[in-house]
Length: 600
Ligand code: GDP
Ligand code: MG
Image (spheres, rainbow, N blue to C red):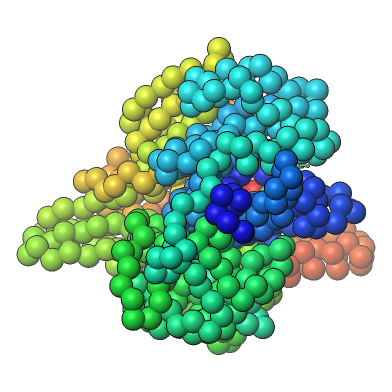
């Protein structure tokens, strides 16, 4: 295929606006997959992705299409839609020349639409707006057109109006891609350069990498080098995804395809890395930065005998996801475990869910922490990823010169009737308003600068509940900022439990301290002795609750000899115990550490 007959494009959209459904329709239209079976969601491979309806790992597919008598090779490069993966989104976009900006005609533009638009715009991509779900009775295409014009200043005169589900106007999509998106530039005669923009672990061939070929040719048998790590690799297979791996023997400038080169683990595949031929020097493709973990949590086996098994399982899972960082951790309360670093909370929840789904692991996960920067008075510096390593009040006052926390720029879009409630929410989360604008008559977009720590807890849930689900939210990196941070400890029967310590802004300590003792009281079961729960800043107690000793047996409630009811209760009690961890002589459930189970 000559470069002018190739198009590399992606679909960007807010979650649930129909990206996967449209991708399926395009794959059917080009006979890449068969049209039998209605909603296959070919791009969403993992079980967790199907369950949660999110795309975690990007998948790329090559399609063949005839337009006005000419054959085209169209590469649909899927991007993870969620903010946690924004670095990976921008890398996959770097392999495209244009993108379809898909907007739900009933919901209108949402926070992820805006965030993804700016990522694509920043890469200089051709952006084609597409209205989806026009079959819905609640669709308001005219209104959404106005939003697109005012928020993005895109020309909507000839906008595509489609229904991916009801297959309306799907045949207009690829002609528009061919006519509006420029072909890839790059020369086949120059030395080979390839951009690594995705990778995954395949149990038969090992690590598979997706490359965008910027210049030159890559053949099976070639020797290549990673510009980032300077490691040499032998190319044992090259090909295109159609939709599964289809070996082609070579790839040339403008194409997008996979390579297999004997990498042992996904951590060798650095998203954004440049590959070139051994012995040649090329200019490295721009913008490489290693993925940064921004959310850290401790993971511990409930039963210490499971340590080895869990260690194996974490290794297996991280083979497939190089963006998870892993360090061993020891907690006084929870014993041996790991501190894992994730790109964001969704990433963390997905990992945890995979660990449980695929490996049947019974684990305790601690409250997530963001990385804090500490500068000491002797000019030394530390990045703290674990509250246990954060200085207590005493040490802090005579050793620490400066404390800093990571910030984000948050975008919120919502109907204006929720404005008051959301301004209040952002205020209590230490947010500072940067901007607010109307994107149409009744929809508001607000921008806030706020601490990442405030976002990684239950901000998203609060946002949804205060806006009856109508507010959408996304964020980008906002750098580090000085902050008056302190460590709050939790004491059970006067003994501090390290795994429950948390880093807070000083102004929040009273509120959180009081809230936590109540919350813990609510989740710890009464036992045969009194349990005191305290929160403290250094030696200063902030709040206290007591759980009084249990007097009656649970089964005493079963009047007479209702055996089946008794069995049921005992069974229930047993199930409740599954995730219990003994801390001293007190049993703590998972909920005491981090309440992710109730999150959607
Ligand atoms: P994604 O999160 O952007 O990949 O969205 P999906 O493709 O998974 O679609 C989300 C939901 O919207 C699914 O239930 C789809 O069946 C539905 N959907 C997608 N496109 C349309 C459409 O054109 N019309 C209607 N009514 N529903 C659609
Ligand atoms: Mg999807």
